[in-house]
Figure 1: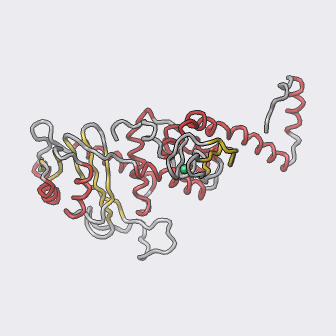
Figure 2 (figure 1 turned 60 degrees about the vertical axis):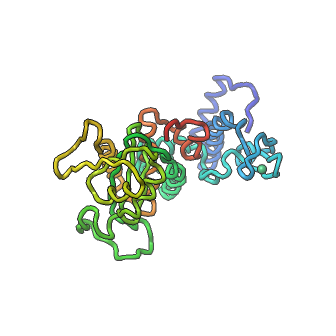
Figure 3 (figure 1 turned 180 degrees about the vertical axis):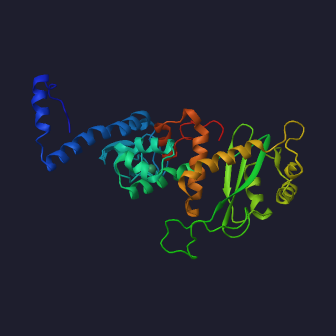
Length: 331
Ligand SMILES: [Zn+2]
């Protein structure tokens, strides 16, 4: 729809406006659709004007594609090298989602940590759509975590109740509300998550199958610098893992009342992170274990940006573009 005619005069507009109240349901829907189209230009127009010139082939990475018509109201490109056609969204988790005009509003809902239902109301989409969008938007944030921790790195494991929430075919009988689960950190009903955080705030977390040395060692090896100093509580799993990896280890004997060694070795940052995570997760009333990493990534993303977060940054994060456009400096 192009509007190149002269702007409507005020008197004309009044006549037109008066007609609004006599629209049939079908006419009203037609009008809403047209206005939706106009509004929908905004987030995508912004993305395309900011990044159209960076477009590169998702298949062979060749730069500077030809412009090749349009697809779903987006610029389509054709690769000079392999002939593949694509848009800026091709290959991203958002590629085939509809109602693009509402994405920034949805992104705001993620910044605000809204529940599925509250986000659905805000964006005027069905709650199933809201649920699907949530996990599409969180796919890349779930995969974006610190890859290198340096200096003093604090480690802590935390536990989430195992949950099949939302799954139709339960592998075990449903648990009834109020029924006590096993003690913290024990039994098959608890899913351990290892959280690693260094003093620059770089954070990585790992959903584990068990909080034992065999499971804790690989993440430590993957992200800790060889000369990092590992701080943890006195649990033997950390001692064993640090020994295998030849890492300097400062265990803090919390049960003996020790909190800080030599003024700098402690686990207070990672513990504070953990309690912010748990406090924030509370609103979701337990999350399906299958999606737990999406929530961990959501929280890391919120922590990364803090008060600088915005719906636009949320969209970058959802598209997996935080690194590509060097928005991230440390993680
Ligand atoms: Zn190509």
